[in-house]
Length: 156
Image (cartoon, rainbow, N blue to C red; front, top):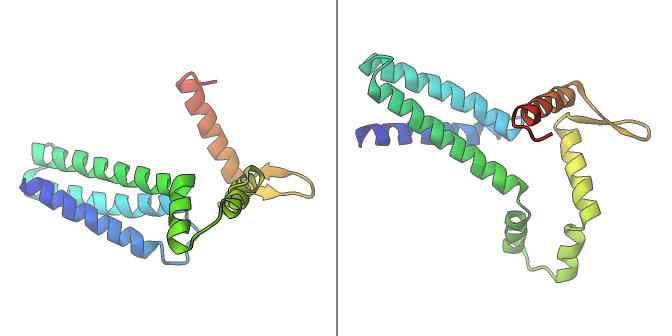
């Protein structure tokens, strides 16, 4: 139980640090920001556990597994919230009531595609040419990685 409380506290520190880090003007996406913060806090957790129990001891291994699970769950939840149409609609409706026509306008399929393209340009994965969009170097690396995953998992 002590281990769970300790790891939960360390995880809470990572989430709070992520919240602060997201308020800085740094050109990193929200996921990348958490990976940076989560990794630093995770290394500190491993160091702390190793100092107390040793590197290959059950409390250290358990702490790393629990911390990794909590971080993965956190990333999954906030990326789901960022990309979820239902979640975004609920948040918009808490700000103000909307008619069906307003909702249809906001969530028009063409507008949704344009919003996605804007996000990809903002994330420096796409560039707008004269007439066409094209992948940036960062976008090409990501596309190669996705292609490798598709091949590995036999989805292509």
